[in-house]
Length: 355
Ligand code: NDP
Ligand code: GDR
Image 1 (tube, rainbow, N blue to C red):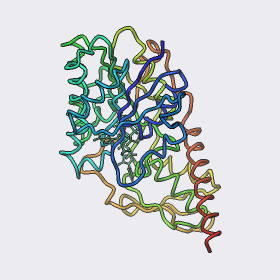
Image 2: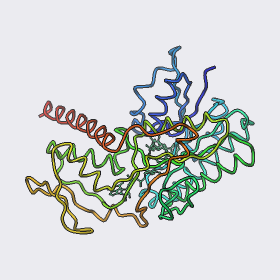
Image 3: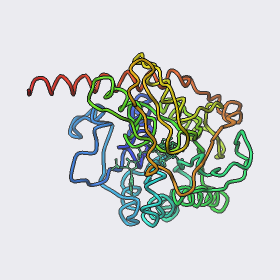
Image 4: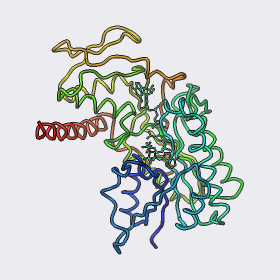
C-alpha cells in the first residue's frame, strides 16, 4: 500500500532530502510551502512534476505554521499516514531578533499540527515526527549528550523548540499518538542555507579561490559542533516513524570539531594553508604562502548566549533503529566544497560571457 506523507518545511535543506527519500520509497508526498515574492522551491524543483501528470507523487500546498486553520485544512485534505514537522525559523542567531515569531512558528506551530491530528480524529492513523534539536542541550551539563541529558536552552529558538519537544511527548502520553522526537545534531550539505556557518565557509572559500571575495568574516571560531550529512539524517527520521512504538532519539556522529577546524579543512581543499595569529576579536587567518589575510573575526556574529559545544551519544539510535551516519567530517566538507566550487565556476563563466 502506498503511504502518504505530509512534510512541513519541504523547501528547506532537510525537506528536500526527505522528499527525495520518500518518493524513492514510493510514498505520495505533500509539502507545505510558504508564499514568497520570489521563488523558494529551488531545492525541490528537480523532484517536482506537473500535478496533472498521472505519475505525479509530489504535491505542494501553500501554508504557514502560524496559521491554525490552514494547517487543519491541509491535514484534513491530505489524510497523511506520516507527518514530518520540519518547518521552522531555524536560525539560532535570527531567533534573538525575531523571538516572538520564532515561538509562533517553532513552538505553537508544532502544537497546531498536533491539535490538527487530534481534532480530525487521526490519532490512530497519523504518525508524527518532530524536528527537535541538539540546541535543547545548550549550556554544557554533560558530554556526550544523550536522550537522558538534561536540557538547558540558550536562545529563543531553543526555548521554542523545547516547548515543541515536550508537547510532542505530552500528546504521545495523553492521547496515545505515535509522536516522536528526533533530537538531531547539526547536519549540513550542499543544500544548507547560506547563513549557517558551514555553508558560509564553503561558499566563501570557493569565492576567495576564484578571486570573487577577499575576506571571510566569522564570529566564534572556538564553537564546537557534531556535524553530519543531512542525507544520513533524513534516513534516521524515516526510521524513527517506522518503529512500532513512538520514542525520542538522538542522531549525531559522536565526533566534534571547531569552526576553526572547519575553516582550515575547507581552505586545504583549494591548497591553502591557514596560519592563525592574534586572539579573540583580533584573531586573523592568513594564507601561509602569500601572507594575505583571508579570515577575520566580526563580533557582529557573536551570540548574546552561545552554545559552546555539542557532542552526541547516538548509541540508542544505533541499537534500536540500526541507524548510523555514513559521511564522516572530511567527506562532508569535501562534498560541500566540491558543490560550491562548481557553483562559483558557473558564476565566473556567466560573468565572463557578459563582460
Ligand atoms: P531550513 O531552514 O533549511 O528549512 C526550514 C523550512 O521551514 C523551510 O522550508 C522554510 O520555508 C520553512 N518554514 C520556516 N518558517 C515557516 C513557517 N512559519 N511555516 C511553514 N514553514 C516554515 O532548516 P533545515 O532543513 O536545516 O532543518 C529542518 C528542521 O530541523 C528545522 O525545524 C530545524 O529547526 C530542525 N533542525 C535542523 C538541524 C540542522 O542541523 N539542519 C538540526 C536539528 C534540528 P522557506 O523555504 O520558505 O524559508
Ligand atoms: P547552529 O548553526 O547555531 O549550531 O544551529 P550555525 O551554523 O548557525 O552556528 C554554528 C556555530 O558556529 C558559530 N559561528 C557562526 N555561525 C554563523 N551562522 N555565522 C557565523 O559567521 C559564525 N561564526 C561562528 C556559531 O556561533 C555557532 O556556535 C544549527 C541550525 O540548523 C539549527 O536549526 C539546529 O537546531 C542546530 O544547528 C542543531
